[in-house]
Image (cartoon, rainbow over all chains, first blue to last red; front, side):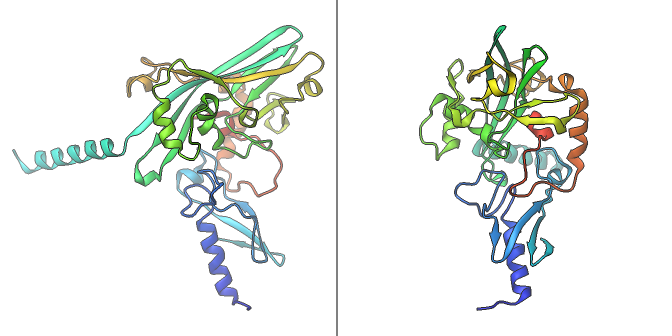
Length: 77
Length: 232
């Protein structure tokens, strides 16, 4: 069943929310700096994330972003 | 007693109660790296602090403080044991479990309980199992972090030449002292600091990268990070 583009983008947003440090939902094999470990969701491929290293400006500000590649486009969530 | 003092007392009591109910357990250990060289055994160590923070806001968080271990192998050669694990240095949580793995503590699915247990183990020591040996690197140029490359602990001769053999990485529990005196370095075994003096130019370049917006993507090759070498 096809889903709308908006719904898929919403799913990516939820996926991003559960990646990186302090993720709400974690893969059982994930460390505390990781959440979900899969490298794709639907036809979207997990790409670069924001800087998450200890001491980084982004982490100190509790910022996290995840990019995805889908049909040649980059989506940032 | 005026209202302000009553309010202050209530806040203090609540804060103390919160800390008692959700304590932070801290331990310190010495990580030692030993390498056989043609000139004899070379070793270096670093005191690392591990804290298990049980407060709900941190969702059961474990963090470390310390510096990577720089081993001078002589003849202008060196190896550095980073504060991470894995062939690409991606397992930054790995050091949280070094004590558990080295001391062979039971129930690996319950690290918090193990940390509580480990706080009473000063003086105990153990080798890190091969899968938990820190990521080892060497720099082509100590001033340039881009020249850092991972060294397989079981392929030192290919990297450094005949007679160079990684012997072991081991952990010894040391006294943590009492907060806040231990943070001032006047009680307990102080956390080792010194990698910034050892690699001033490389550390300055890596520190500047802390402000980079982009991090890593799955499948990216190894890249050394500031937090691999120093965690405040």
